[in-house]
Image 1 (cartoon, one colour):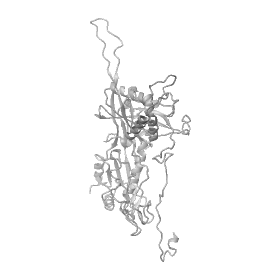
Image 2 (image 1 turned 120 degrees about the vertical axis):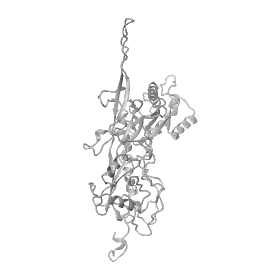
Image 3 (image 1 turned 180 degrees about the vertical axis):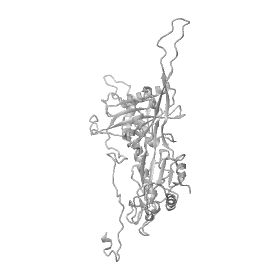
Image 4 (image 1 turned 60 degrees about the vertical axis):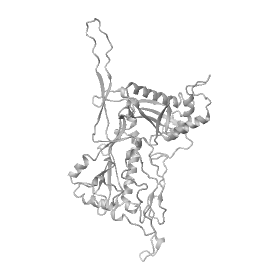
Length: 502
């Protein structure tokens, strides 16, 4: 069998781990701790170790499939310190003119350049430890072993990240023999929960001192001002992003200095004009914002879009103008269904992402009580009609060099998954107990920060706040039984109390 292409959804887990463990001798890795961590899927104390369960399993876990992290394209890389070159202008050469006709003309100014860089992040998780002979156990013939997940708890986008090796949705039954697959699934969810907010908040300053944990620069750093040449240390203001502050006004507040349509339209025009002058058009811009904010904006967008430059005598730009109600409702519904905003006649795609940081009055007293505030990101996905991708993921590729080096060391208990984006290792067993470790090294590339923008501190006031997808967020909903269901103890000579003796 080929360990590098190991797929736990199609191979017998016992065979896989038998081969891996037989090849793991002599590898200086820390052994498992020898303390199995339940609950298991089936059998006594199992999560599904209950007699008579219906076959479909419905997941209420809030996956984060609607996110910028899931929408961005993905590449592999083995370069740890990339350098991105730019031509940022030319030295001025019109400060003086020659006098005599035979005088030497002024020399044309040379070009100016800037070099930016970025870095990989590093994140690791491990599976819960398990006892190998516990896999496959069932309580009795009354415990069904053909359960199927109806809706996958893992993201199905993100160019296949975390799904190529965790495809549990309507593929295989959640059988007792898939115990290790389920624990891989838990690792997948943990990686996704880390990666989604890091897309925005990632900051290498938060990395551990000795490199065990590293963060890549997120969009809050790359869509910003203060760009610095990676070699010379000089500033590169022509690469700065456009940053504007909405001042924590509610998007539906008519007392705001400028309505939300005016601000977003002005920012879009600025970016489009810059792209035109830099010969970058057409640019594929996407707007990324929280889903509740998008709904609040589309509530007012049709009226503001069609009237914000129409003036009524004696009224401000926010003065009310009568619109055909059917037209406004249809425009609103079409934007929500199509996930876009109509800006200067162009449909700008919107990615709703509830991993974006959100604040309340408790975080910032400038936010109105009962309101929530977050940022809107203008992200350039590509330039020149799609010829060049400009915002994308890069992952360190473990296939090209890492696995051959491991093979040379006769350490075949390592394998990669998801096109080399994840490196896995089966730790040497502690008697009958095993666990697995996994790591990834991603980074987010933003090649045209000067065509990106961020509108900060945009407030909205929903009647009901949506449920959050991350446990760290205030509107995340917990619940359920994490410890399994104990089986009744039948009467016996060693248990005369029977079921009542549990």
